[in-house]
Length: 309
Image 1 (cartoon, rainbow, N blue to C red):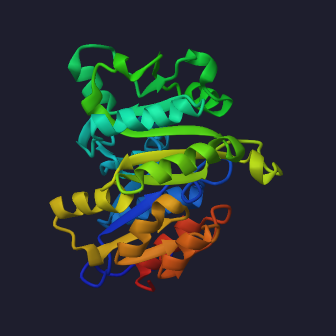
Image 2 (image 1 turned 60 degrees about the horizontal axis):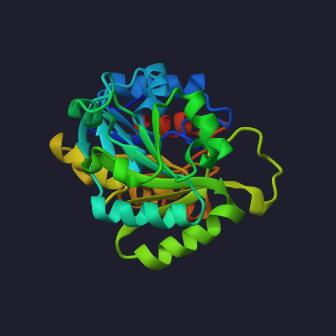
């Protein structure tokens, strides 16, 4: 176990950690060394905050695995949830009129629009038992791409499929709108959305978490296209939490690898890029750790706790 430094000498009070491609190895598991490093950090009084593009119900099994205690930044920063109950602490909701325009554009390209909801708000409305996703398509279930079908089943995600957004009983609870499919199929929709909504939303277009896709041609890579309220990113959510815990931004450390980690890697007091980070994420980080097959998160946390970083 590496030596630690006293709290008075420690440079960072909060470590924000991404999941896919960062804490999780390529098989979607948390390595023992990484779980132990997180436990050491928490034992020394460091607040470890998971920051993920997944919704709460898509990552709660992971936060339980590492004994996570802090609020969880989910949906790419669009929501902050209680780690134990899953109840929403804060959400950055999307304007319903903007959501309608986005959904119309996505469905016009033949995609099922995946409208992520604040599920605790949906349940509290009393209108339904609650669902994570409202799936909008005139073709119903047939329009849902195979990867999304697999993801919903794998994580036991509640969905409600409707032909149009007119069936959305709680429009104020939308935090993200997206599609999933091959690069070839999603590219036209992505181009159209960027052209029409460039000044209205935050976009992410990146690789999906899909098993068994190694060796696929570039056009057949599975991508996710996501649109959020313009102010949404992981850093905005981390900063919201830090302000309420009286933690200066300079005392925040962030670890990540992908496009939705760039803002927190750039603005945190210490941005740490994984060895497997995309070039854009690696370029804005101050230091670099090992990749996610080699315990990169543990390597980084040990250096933060020792005072080396």
